[in-house]
Length: 316
Image 1 (spheres, rainbow, N blue to C red):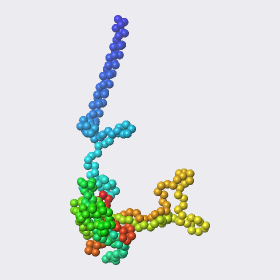
Image 2: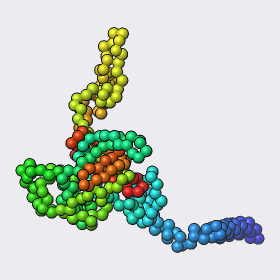
Image 3: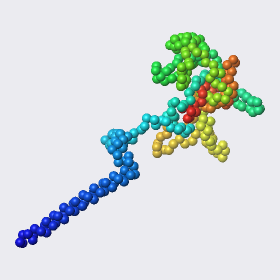
Image 4: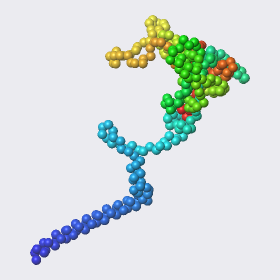
């Protein structure tokens, strides 16, 4: 009939659409199966559920102040176990491979002279006298004070010249005589030191050791910019009016001010300085002196501190 003839094309259309959907589904299944096979062939760990769990545990989500979430990779606990060199940061060095930081001493600058070795070579040296002192007055540990250090007392003086609390501090720790100077030395191991112990230079330093010498530099008073900062002077002839003057110190309209830290005339010297890597030439406990090659801060009578040089990648 006419109705059957009209229904046939509609049924064919429906059958065609259903077969097309079935074909698309089969293609999708084949693509998924092939992709999993390829991934498993390249890297089995990428497609395994254990790997996905490991990836999820190896990172963490952190919220930024603006509300944005970022993924932070997991850092292993042994990230400090690295091969170090002299250019790496000191916090990258493993503590168990560092050389221990040794103890230092205090001394008094006696002056400079010339020292001739066996080959006849002249060396400019500084003689550092060891006056009465260098006695341990306190031992600080991580358990009691949060860090390891040894406090030294140096240069005997009369009792009434130091404050009463300091006098009682010396009596409490080793019953030490009145000393004028107290200084801390941070070291790695404090187990070998006790309050009241007298330190010997020959036990701490040897000929050839490198030391860092710290002290207060000589005061030179109020000096101009030429001597203080090494600036050049102006012309001395041809009508010049600017011989040793400082010159311009800034612009007028912009920024209409003088920048902070501008090098100008002022007080020179009388600052704490450290001269590093000075070799020890002589050590004598009987005559109480240490001789180092080179100059040290200060003038005659300046109190200086001698510490073993800290080499990057070795001690710190």
